[in-house]
Length: 115
View 1 (tube, rainbow, N blue to C red):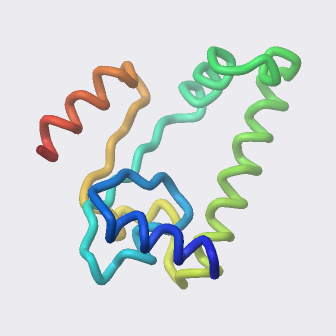
View 2: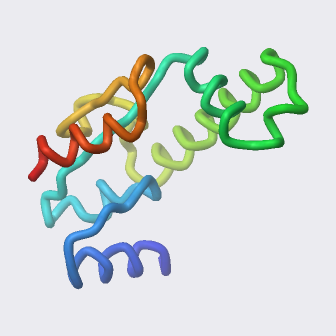
């Protein structure tokens, strides 16, 4: 698969951050640092509303359904290609709950932790 090849080549060239696309599984022989970031639904809705105009047009119920649909697709994609469960904390080295966190501060804290 072309996507796997691109991820593998990027990781072999230099240190990098790859979000999603089952990179943890593709790069498992390189033993990458695997980070899973999650939040409660209310925080996801609030962040969606802050980020984009699409969310402004949706009710909280509709936005919740859209988020849940996206998460289900992520889980199916990950399970199909890896035979593992997306979000299973046993697949990751560090899990970060961003429910009550400011993203910028969280990123800096993770950088200090990893480096």
